[in-house]
Image (cartoon, one colour):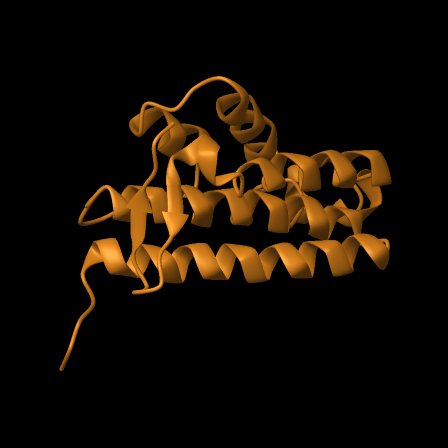
Length: 143
């Protein structure tokens, strides 16, 4: 059986994040604001994991984008975005995140649009220092 190296699997993580971004945009159009916020957190999670695998991490565990960004020594705008998006990881999905009511009842279009903007930051390849290559791997760019 053939296995891709972690570095080459980075492309798979990045492509899934891109596909999830399309789903987030569709959900925004449909008015599913909690879903958009959750998906955007997952997009950032997958994009940062792509970078970690590109940097040849063997394993990347956890779903806190903030912690992943810190582990990769990324700060500034992406760290701010990570902190906001992590607030949507549990609260958008689980009814016990709030005293009463379903999660979707608590999220607004404004929050969803902000989440989309933050998720989009993780696709600005200059910010995470990589670009997709034809061979399926990621290559570091000059910042």
